[in-house]
Length: 137
Image (tube, rainbow, N blue to C red; front, side, top):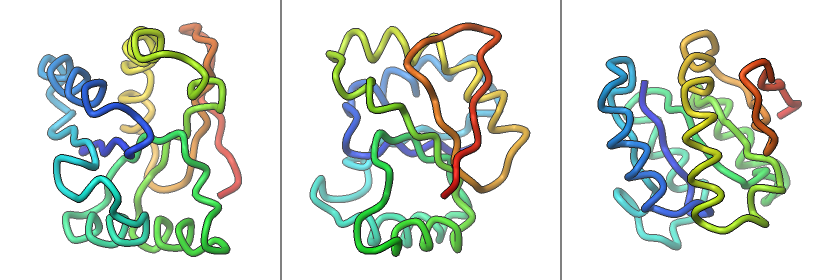
């Protein structure tokens, strides 16, 4: 599985998750947008270019509603799966986001093994019993 963190999340958070995922053999790659593209790369650019490497699991706070749905359509065409962090994530500081994503990460990876395509909401509140919810995308 290959995970791609959108620019609305810290590259340090993505790199930390990459290092922690070293003990998870099914996670083959974790990249932040800035690892591969200019920080101001338009969503349609990186969404399309990522598809050259097959489908990715995208982690973002973005709802991809800009450009009249073109981003969502590009994601669907490319076969990417999106994990959209609830808006509450954006109101938290770096360390709070980091702590919470580390808690959620095993569930996100496990869920990724079961799904291909679509979009799933990752709530701020964490519980091992909490399920990720499919959202209309």
